[in-house]
Image 1 (cartoon, helix red, strand yellow):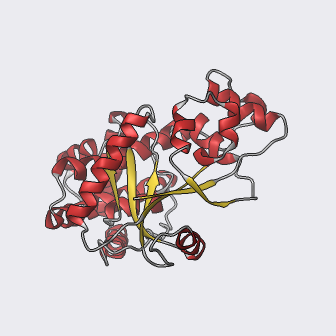
Image 2 (spheres, rainbow, N blue to C red; image 1 turned 90 degrees about the vertical axis):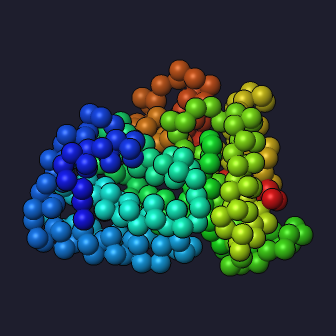
Length: 299
């Protein structure tokens, strides 16, 4: 189910995996293909991921590999995604998804390998369930932003209906995500992504009528508007949204993870090189907290 060594290396490059990790991943890939137990487990995981491909499932929980080698445990989900790749690409082709959209969407795998190396210094994947959205046909990279096909939950469905939208719990919505390593979150880049999304989903998922875009992110914490310049990209991004609900449970590790690369960093050691780094770190050092914001805007 995995390509041979030279083809595996090319596939990993196509998926954006950092070059410094290719050789090690190819070597471990041989172990997967040579071991009957690992091959069987790989087939089961791929079957679980691709069963219901294209349905809105909210991601798939892949089973843990019970294996004594730590490196293989870290990297095994990557082989699952590589083995599932032909199924995902066939699904994209059946929908008429352009090749460049398919390629950029699935190359998020390599970005997550880079995130893992930045945090731990070795290859691996931090968020394997997250990547099942990409390879399961639920999420697409369209310009600067990612868009996830989803359904309204109880709280957002009722909140948006109260605001006058034709929505209810269970009706389709687009969840909007902001990946790192992709340049500034400028208003122009966001406008372009939203225009691309409007055309993309009308063309490739016309049966799903999206009335609203939702975002659940620490970037929507209103405290950022108090600490950053009014013309900053983040503050201007926040202005696009109406508040869906407010969280009262602190989520301090979220900005530490995304701004500094590791949620476990000591607050006292956080650098102050940029306005965002100073805003995140200074509030935490002063005893404050950060929260996940929940916002929406009509489509």
